[in-house]
Length: 188
Ligand code: HEM
Image (tube, rainbow, N blue to C red; front, side):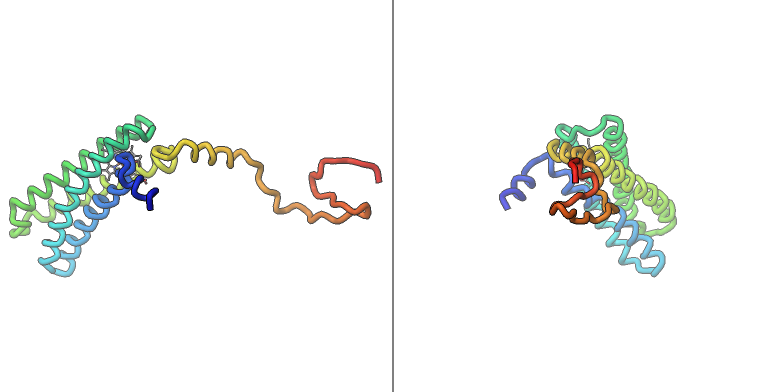
């Protein structure tokens, strides 16, 4: 519990806890918009609007937490630049789309709704790409991972593979085993 709380209060640990929200909320908003078209349910468009608003709020929080994480994560510069710039661009795009929705009364006249949907699909691809590069930094480059754990993984890589195909050792008449690679020699 103490460990959990200290992690939660560590600003550099906030980013991974928040990032799932914008990714899920933006894609869920698009999902409900598409469903509203397919099932002809106008009320689903209201749900999509609320999900989009929450998505923008959580994306702003994710950007703030990302800036803090970048201070300590030891992330590769080039990938971090792509990740963070794309994250900001995606958030701006969805914030503009939210403003557009609000201005048009959530597309009370559906004439331009298909144009909105194309932009939202592009935005969804963008936020998934942001997530992809974020995951790449952590799981492929070890950004934000405790250095001692990275070191341990590296050491495990250096250990020889266990030889499961080795013949079972047969006890010798002299009373002790001669397993494969036993290494020592003596006269029988
Ligand atoms: C909408 C905004 C953003 C989203 C959705 C997002 C998403 C992600 C995701 C999914 C990860 C992998 C986390 C994990 O698997 O543990 C990640 C890692 C990371 N992101 Fe972001 N990110 C956003 C904005 C930013 C910004 C603006 C910065 C920096 C200026 C940033 C810096 C980092 C860093 C340093 C990591 C690796 C260390 C860590 O996970 O704390 N991110 N991000």
